[in-house]
Length: 151
Ligand SMILES: [Zn+2]
Image (cartoon, rainbow, N blue to C red):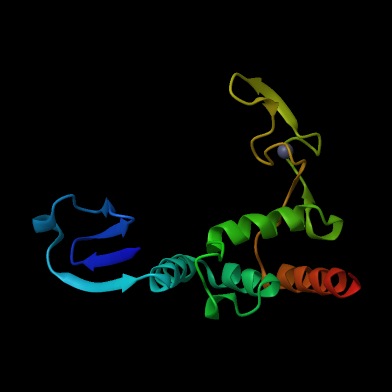
């Protein structure tokens, strides 16, 4: 896999197939700025997504996957995918979650054709996570370390 970064866009070449991002002709892309091959592509794309996260989101990832940003390979889940897993884990922990204020913890709300009665605020999970804060991160870290060391 090769990633080429141009002034006006980028191209990924994977097994001979080209994906264009930004512009769709070689002329429109402008000058080649940098090029990555193999695992360097994974590292670049991972870091790019990671850098776009809020600092507290990065810290949340670091609680569960310490130093993951330093050892990215093609098998490392992308940062947003890691966050999805982390949020699911937190939603299962009573002291980390809040009862969904929209459905009152039933997971159901008014009917619509697409979701039926599934509450869209909690997606039927019945719980939501509080806004990311340093205080909540401390709770999460404690909970994770307790469970982790117990297993
Ligand atoms: Zn709900």
